[in-house]
Length: 215
Length: 154
Image (cartoon, rainbow over all chains, first blue to last red; front, top):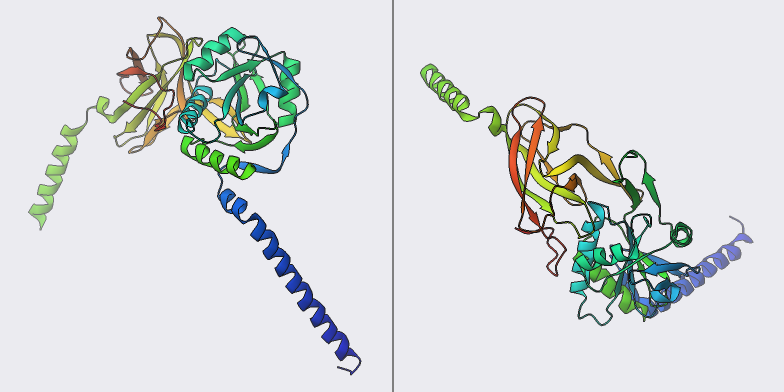
């Protein structure tokens, strides 16, 4: 080791120390600011996006026959599930869980809305949807639309559905579809995703924490 | 020592011989049918099937005189997408159980012969490759969730 190298090594150590101190200070400052939000959002079952995703325009029809568009996902939090009324297992199971969530959140500071969107408009008229969703909960909203308008929405959400053609002879065909429940924030943006197995208590708990951290 | 062993063997043998007629090898527990929303003519049935015997059992079908058609399906969630996979033969190894439950394996029941409401009952026939079919009566239950969020109730 030569004499000329000594100062440069010292300088490196100094720079390293300063950088470390600055990082620690910055980290402390950031974590201190975000502390409440972070602790609220630790251990969520839900997948929450760092940046909520805005939704391009779509034009569906609700179960009363009225237009159902972007603004109908605004003003409140919305749980959205895609399925179809001839679905024997997954959809009734999910809507039962969502009804439990609705009841758990009845008196929450923020009461969400629940929307069931049918990806099977061939069989699911608004009237059919109305009778279907109200079987589970009188406040649930049913919506559907033309295949084009449904696709406008599903494609940007990464929601997938496909008719299974194995049972071609019967009208009891099945539709494979995304099994997750989507959560939209009051600004109508795609905010979080709940994946199966869906547990009502977990969803309600996550929702309370996500909605509290949001405002 | 020897007489004791013989005694034990004989007792065990008697127990074994008298124990289980073929029909008792399959035990169906908690069968139930999910009441369908008013728009639907496809219902789902669930149950627990125990094979209490010493040989594997192959269930070939679960049928019902109360429906036009039935199919056994497994709900699979792959890459977030729910798919229905038909179950051809349901094999249950000796001493184990298969659970048909919401979001998992289930019996699909198409086109009921009459409108079924909670409180009604349905006949299910569990058919197997070897042995007599097992007939059970399953209640139709309303299962739409509750604040207590039980999977189902009796």
